[in-house]
Figure 1 (cartoon, rainbow, N blue to C red):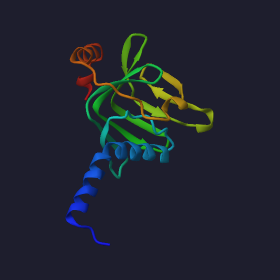
Figure 2: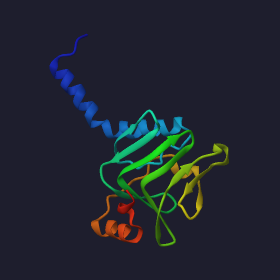
Figure 3: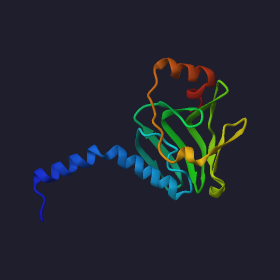
Figure 4: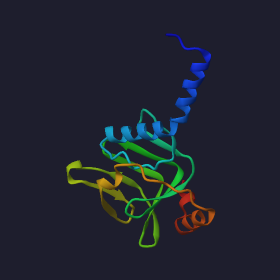
Length: 160
């Protein structure tokens, strides 16, 4: 069976329409293959790259706010070094703790049977239930005022 130009165009169009969910699900699978829960990144992942040295770069449609246990802010690009069970050297992700916005420096799962994931927020390590990260969270684009608040309170953009 050969493909006609019209059927090839239709097939290409269908693939493009399903690309965001395919990208999100392939990132989900990549994280799971590395011993991490698949829902660490939000539902608006546009693309991602993983270089041979393990440097992961995740591109979102836009910066956005999501909620696991606390509110988290994803920049439009999040970078980290990926190794089995660990994202370290994270850039582009901050979370709210007691009215403060703190950069997430690392995420790790050392013992999956514990049901816990560890977030390194610099001044402390926070343990959360792995079940919070099964599915990608809904991530809502936020207005300029919230982003300005986050930047003002954390110096977030100056860290990059």
